[in-house]
Image (cartoon, rainbow, N blue to C red; front, side, top):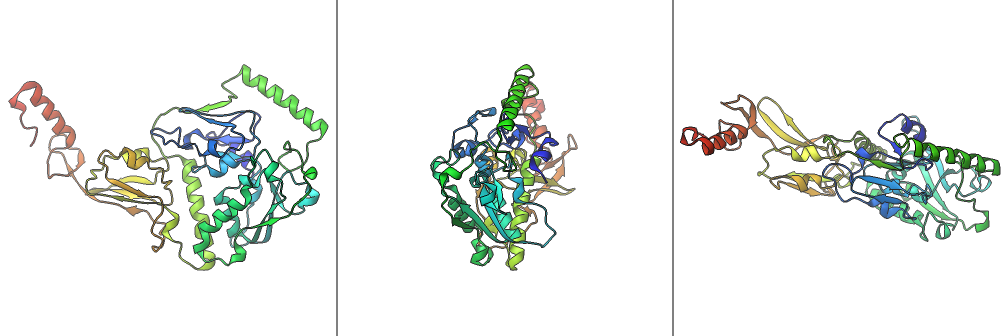
Length: 398
């Protein structure tokens, strides 16, 4: 599936800038969601400081090189870069690729051969690389020695760091060493490197194509100025209704599915260490604030006729800490990683269960904490009435 094509049919994603290959979903951005966290991983990862993160917007400057490193580190899948969809083509279930070489788009096609090329190897996310491990027998990331002078690397070589991180993440799955991503250093003359401006299929931009693209960009920029509601350089969010983001849910479930597939290949149980864990104390009275602010829907309050309880799906959890921060009774504890000795279960966990009863005044169902027959709302109303009108309403504590 072509990412750029699918995004255009998803109203949640918008281009951060009219002429840049970076797409953004404000609903999935942890910084912009109601009660949001101070997440700025995209800005910190950008090698050219092209991303600006404000309280109500994310902006992209013309300095963006399209490397995709911001999208690679985004914990919620709110950013997507074009040119990386070639990494995960559809394959029949259970089928793997014997050997997969990955190259940067700056490498000429005659040198890259059959390698799959992306705008920047540093823009491959950990989840994507783990997915490639699951679908390929041998993965090799080719290092031509150009990273240290490339604007998209800012003097660093992100390839080895990516491979080493993925190795550390999945070493307990039981794969043989040859299945882990390898970095092959192939020093190549720097004068052979293509310029940063390339088409998404890796073809160098010709003189005619360059000026044609320039005229198109100029026209689009002019249209953006005339019609700011159609093309904007900043994507804003309205801190509206609290609801789980489908984009975040998809990104988290995709990660879990890839890990389960990888574990299935070795016959080894997937450890709970790959997913966060949450516990709840007896002080919880199910206000439901935690489930309301959870950006992925990992926490939900489920009711039946006799009881209500807090349920937790570790596969969806981002470990962002919003639930802990906003819990009115301080009842939640969060661990970024589960117990390494415990097998992971794809099923939701029920964290607690509290008894329900019907209020004798309003007849509405409520969680009975202290063996009261009156719900908290009616007790509050009774107390206010007693304060305003005297002892004739002194049944507030009944």
